[in-house]
Length: 498
Image 1 (spheres, helix red, strand yellow):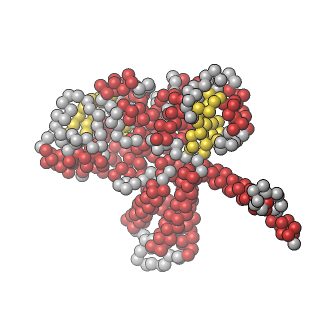
Image 2 (cartoon, rainbow, N blue to C red; image 1 turned 30 degrees about the vertical axis):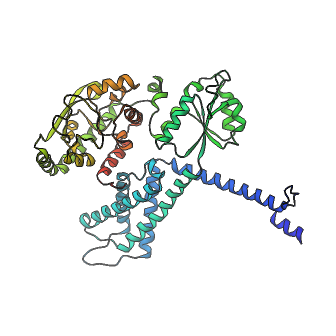
């Protein structure tokens, strides 16, 4: 009887040294193996979701929304109304999809930092769904002169929130519970840069195991607890340390015997990546301290591509004209508020550095007290004491930037690009930050990748962080990226608790 039971459970009697049953020991081991398989599967799915591009997330959300609308129309058949026709399914799908796409881009639902935080996921999903519903109803009622069932809308949006929200929360859980082990092959300085990135809220999905060198003659700081010796000595410990990613520094990649340890790492299932490529994909910025002049040779920058420049200029003109028309009613109200606040001038102009180092006059609604700089360029900050009461509101909503539409119209700026700086600040930062002047290869912008990814720059270190985002934009600049930045900039007016 006992033997039969053991056979059914696939458990063998094993002597136990600690007095426990051998059956219990083997059952624990089997459970541990099953849990390991489950964790690896969860880690794989989570990593796959995190690395999905924005276009794929958009496609999946649109497909989910369309499928739910089809089910809703079947569950709640639309009534026959004589005076106000009910919108057909084939009409409702593109309308609701359009509303969802616009709202999701505005509220940053597809940004990397969203998937890293449960609160951001829930908040931005609720904001996106609410805005998408509002946009869809506006199009259906005002443009199409039709109606849509509230039960259909409610059913679709509730199940969309539950379904896609669960997927995003699962991806977030895998980030924080199943950290991927990351081993750095290079110097202590490179490893410290990854530690600093984690301190700044980046690379949170990784567990920094430590760093190794490529040569015994260069052991680095042997007293450093993160120094794990040489890569050849550590290869056999990769599996035990749960290392899934190996990042190779620029100097380490020049090691003549690089393939002797890269191939064994790959054979153990590790992902081996160059430091610049890894940091760029994981953080959306370029690691300035580690790039060399060769980076500009291999980055394939398209700053002077005629086709791209033509499309970008046409996009700037169309968007600027639309922006001027839509914002025209606000201009006299803003001007009156600025004037009544302290009686000073409404507009403020100052020299800025444009494309290829050319100087131009940038225009803004005045947000600071008159003569607050006294001829000196000072760092601005969100809570700058020189800012007026009206100026704080204008800065928070970015309405003070509206006069720059004129700079865009005459071709001195673009809608999207690195923010222009004062000439003396550019000279100072160019001496202290490598490749800072190279951000002027493109026209400065009203908004940019650095502006939606980082806070106000109030120090040289902040300027360095923003430079890393600007270089990322230089390398990846495209119409798709410009549109995403533009939508996220529009979200500044609405995000509030986002």
